[in-house]
Image 1 (spheres, rainbow, N blue to C red):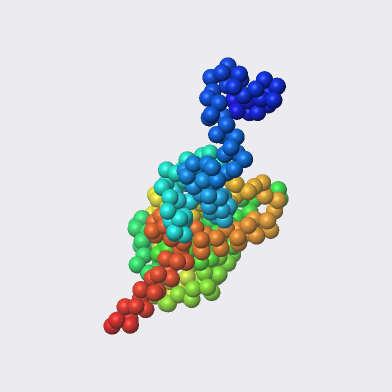
Image 2: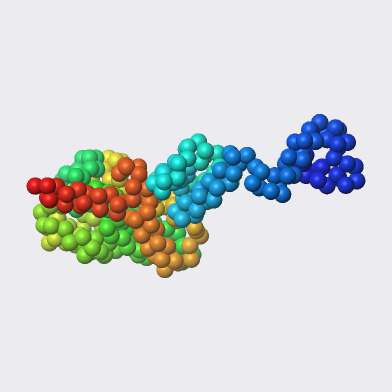
Length: 301
């Protein structure tokens, strides 16, 4: 602000008299003017900051503007850009760039007390040693101008890869079954080698859904009653979906708009989003690394 004032009145009052009143060194003002005219005269730090701001903005924009400083810093390092995390935090703060913030989880499914439930074969241990060993399913809802729509996900635990999803205007069993069918078509899992876990929602314990799992040779697991962590990993994916897409890009017109945006988000999530639990790599890369290691072990054997 001080330098702007000098710029405005220098022709009429002169630089030195104004600097004397404002207690600003004339040399500091002239140095700033020179750097403004010739950016190459800026300090090495200022020049590097300008270059890094461009890289930070690129990464932030490319990742749906949901990354905070930690994820931006991780992505820059993956690309070979050496920078301290505190520098990324400082420059993002200066540029007004911020990541998506998680809100309170909303429970969507409601248990059917009259429906028989399979055993809980997971017991909060959401870990897998390979793809297609453990899947989990859940759904969330989105408010649109034409009413609520519902979004179901089927996720492979090994790398958090979304293997199936569906958008629907109703919560009927057929809609979560459609997401399962997409997952089965995409993965074609080996019989008797996969566990499917969900909460006790009526859609997931329905006869239609459990029969389809049995037909595919998939073992069924349902979370224990009254346990808020019975399907916590699925609710984590729902939370990311809501905060990174739904809350940031709404309000939503209709189901078609939600479906198109969800398609974009799922593709980004599977192939580009860095996930801390799997070593800050995208799900697709984590799975590719697994299969590459298995091929290497087979060759060595």
